[in-house]
Length: 392
Ligand code: HEM
Image (cartoon, rainbow, N blue to C red):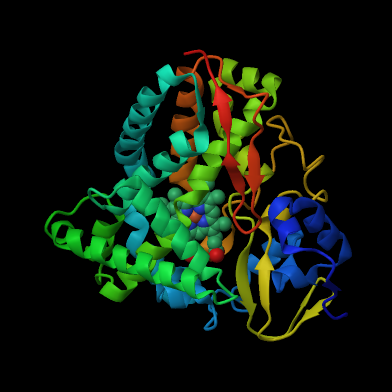
């Protein structure tokens, strides 16, 4: 067994710009590598991440030092075993397949229709700000059970919480904004909680207050913050990535438009290709051997699912967006007990409603030759600008 090797000649900006060559280097170096720019030991091979996610006694989601706990509070996403299962069970009614199909899907389709109605005449837009960001924000607001909050406010809260949870340089202004977002969310919860107690409904807040036993208020606050921090940018980025993948490859686009039953496959390929969550953390609870490397007790590791989804031991020509590749499961939604609670709602709504509607309603949708799309990030990754034209 050997110690964890280190890579020190990579800049943080290079990770943000294009993490994939760095992920490849890490993957080819060892099962776990300390990357100085990230100040974290990264795990990048598909099989190793699967092994880790099957063993939560050794690879724990609990980390007392995590800023997620400081910024958001006691969330089930950073718990193990029975405590995690209790929180997960409490929110589950809002994510049931039947509720998604009968309740959320028509609501999200109506939001998407309205946003596209406003766009059709323009003939050009940046789909990040004109569609994907408001779509993700408004639909999450519905699911949570908030009323009358501007989509920009929820989006700002989400970003401020994410920044706060990653603020390891302890920038005071970032801390202040995260705390301000947290206070805004607590007030918004307070404003609707009595309504949800009195009227049971499919929303997440309703599920929490009607759970048996009801979720305590400090856990409601923490878990709603996690859902705002982690349930907004991923659908936004998935909408944009799927759109980008198809627009950049007219043959694949034509295939999907000719055979709509390919939409679900195209969605899975998009989140494999550019995974909206590129990395999430675990803590090593006891010294362990991971494929020949010794991980000491207490080590914080980053599971790079964005790297594992491009592991060439599993996926042929992994950097290519290819909806016709051999069918293989991926790790974009994680694995094991913390497998994403929002998987089915995202599959159903992004892959079957929103992006298909976009291509159906905006005729001859195409990328702009003069303004290329911009994709950025490694912990969270997606297009930050997707300028397009269509025939108005
Ligand atoms: C394309 C869209 C999405 C992607 C790629 C995604 C990805 C992920 C990943 C990788 C995790 C595991 C994180 C970890 O273990 O630390 C996760 C967890 C989670 N996601 Fe998502 N997510 C998406 C959409 C959503 C949505 C829309 C919601 C809520 C409305 C949501 C709610 C959650 C929750 C509550 C957890 C924590 C689950 C647990 O700890 O048991 N996600 N997601």
